[in-house]
Length: 318
Image (cartoon, rainbow, N blue to C red; front, side, top):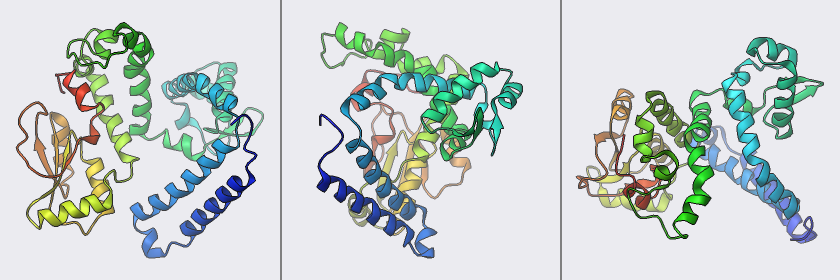
């Protein structure tokens, strides 16, 4: 597309799609609104239609330029998190007040906020006066903040070196356990790198909670229903391998309350103790991915931060 969309039929169809998805959302009954998965699904439909409309009304050059500047936005968000800036925002907060609360220079605060308001992460009420948006409010949640910190602090070094790493392999698919991107960037495998700093590992586990918490059920309902039917009351409907505290499994169970059968979350280390402490409706099992799977049934390896091949190339697991 060489210019903003000139296909009026496409735009009108998108308008109708947005209107229909909004109508479906506002028409939810009180009983339906009480079911979070149902609400999430309706909101997701609005978001998909709105995102499609946005992509149809911006030039490719604008989109490509935004991609180029995205790392700077990540850096500004990470700086704001370090300053605890989002927790200092309110319904009306000035740059001078933020400077006083964070100890950062007022001019620097204004420059950071210029980026955050430009991307609608923070609302600008007036000259150097700001307020929360739903996004900045979400960034006050520990797990969401830790997800951003983890990606920037622990993953960005790998991300930045990925082009050079793949070039060094002559663009062959990485398949050597002692020559992963993590080895190239940090000198060791990913999980050993995490374990080398206790605070880094704690932040990673918290980050995975944040990532899992925002996902809708990743299992198509018909597939899970079929697994539940085959499992019966006492059989295994699903095994979430590397499932952390079970946040994704909980989503699947909430979205499919009628599914029979056992749901099992497998992981290692302190994270399984934390999962058990929740007294969940699912079972928690200590399991090393590189040993024989003791359970036969429906598996969800989607919670892994890497593909199976990448896991194979990173043999240590926290």
